[in-house]
Length: 357
Image 1 (cartoon, one colour):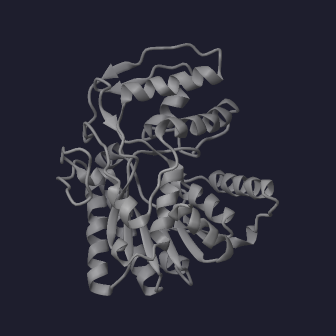
Image 2: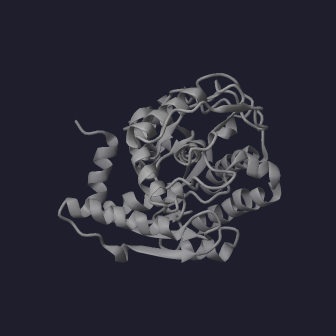
Image 3: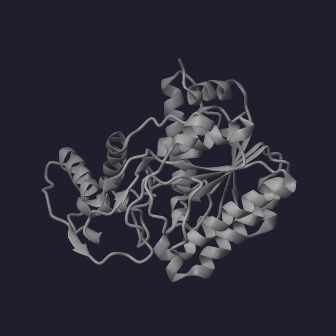
């Protein structure tokens, strides 16, 4: 018996819709682009390239082309249109939403430390830009607006696993913006009957995730550092834990959320994770082992511990029963499987000296 996601993919292969992916040149956005192109969908991508990279788009299209070629099919490159624009400009949002069926809103300024350093910049993108997109999508009569929410919304609520209906107080400007996103979605549902679904991502990782810069996610950052045989720094004692979730699971949730025919499932937020918990110490061990297995010249090296980072929660683990029940979510990759796939990509891109993003 096929899963809900498998059924959906079969439906999309023979039924074409128009999708807007904001932040299409970023990590999650480019993976969504790749999957939608494989499924013969029409995709409009919106990006201002502040954080995204054009080579992510090129690679997503190339990867889709290769997968389709292996199935005896051709990529319909005319199905993709790129708009270089900014969600902080309403006219750009209005243009991008024209004749769109579904919006997958991924454009945002992530990172707790970045938001602490520059809360105004984070607010302008994550709240002003988000509201622009909501209004533009509503005006365009978009069928469904799926947006990237965040596990940071749980704030100082310490209960595990995290259940969608119970959140605490925000611990950073970034988390404030993500709480406001959910509040606006609720208001638009009640006031305009506009259908939205928020996806609270829990430490998503995978190919095309940026390994550069001060705000890089922990997995690609550590991979790059280990490959360069530099010191890895762990904030705190290393027992801080997270629910690490491979990108394919996040792609699945976006498509399920956009296409659900379950009325009860809309105007909701969902955790996107595995209901699992991995400490930073364990994560470091898993990454190091996989890199040494692939590059025999590398040797084991102990990490260096330093102070805990401001705004970080101690432990994070998601209850995913709501997504399973209402959307038919069925994660396809646990952390070990995801790391195997991600590590192949990182080694290939970083060792060859290519930029990763």
